[in-house]
Length: 282
Image (cartoon, rainbow, N blue to C red; front, side):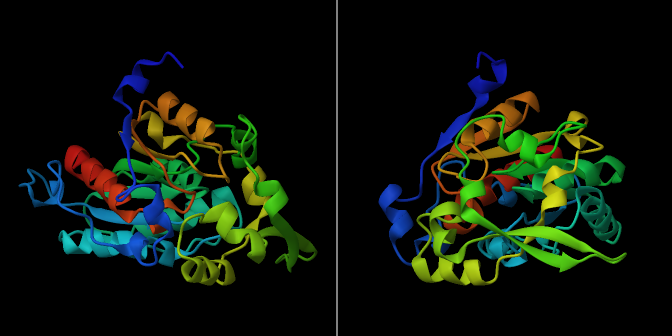
């Protein structure tokens, strides 16, 4: 695309090359110092924000553990609430209630489906100063996650998931999706150590199909500065779709050669992007 935003796109390599993804423990290794390092150590002219991290489908709050560890090491407050994954509007309302209990400025981070949630939740959350999208949906008003997934080829999620059913409060059943455990690592966490990926598969959070079909009612990225990380090896959201959404949002964008579960496989560049957002916007 001949967008001026593409000139700002930065390519971020894996910490030790592609082979490092297969090395046990590599996903949680402490990053080596770099010339651009420690944005958090610089003096802040304003109050330091709280980093609120929203997970997406087929994951839980523990997927942020390595990122939280790095943020806390830099002296940042972090919060990673559990997302119900039952509907975009209801999930956003829940996160908005969580934000209401956080004092001071907030940097709101969303992974995957969580990107749609933060886009809606931040519309009525004045203390949110920046949005960070990690391999995430960045929907406009009237767009759904499934619609954006199908915008470009490359997603293999439909073939990797199975339906299951849960009771609805008013009666009847709702349909939810899970990634088949035998396909989880390949689909969601390629390169993550096998034992870690297996534990993630067992503990994955199913998402209601209706949540993926529900259209966004707000797009907070239109008024807030935004940062996007494109995971170039992702199989849930096509990388081309991630790039297109980032450019449309005029987001500061980095590209990381990593799977969809990039916060687990490559927490260092994820953390660096969050710190840039916190330093620039707050």
